[in-house]
Image 1 (tube, one colour):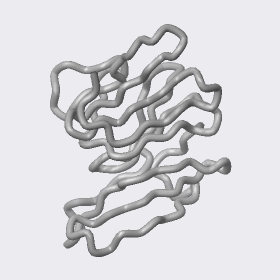
Image 2 (cartoon, one colour):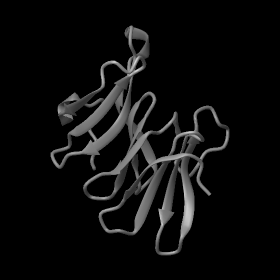
Image 3 (spheres, helix red, strand yellow):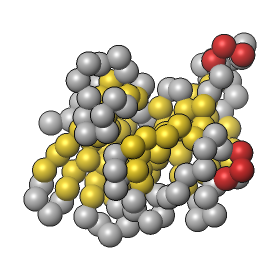
Image 4 (cartoon, one colour):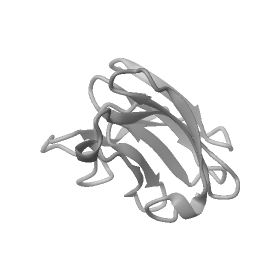
Length: 146
């Protein structure tokens, strides 16, 4: 059913589970009330998308629900994206600038804060500068409403 899941998260109300599938580049949603599994988005470059039409992820490593349970944060190769579950739109809120770096980094973990900020674990390609950063809401590309 799942291919190389890297992370799972349970919604605050306990009714939904999301799964980050690293190898297949998918983000999956499990609805516990009926056991259904839907793909929110598929791999980068795939012509077949999930219910978040046209949205893609590249090697999702970490996943978390926003505090209200209405959004899902996904740390993938090129940044952190948020999927809004009310309309399945996706925003990029943290991006990696691969072209401007001698040692590009990717987010490997994400956790939302109640004030709109994020904790992001990041690893460089050379894996010599692993850090955890506190990003205030004002530092994000777009302002998420978790």
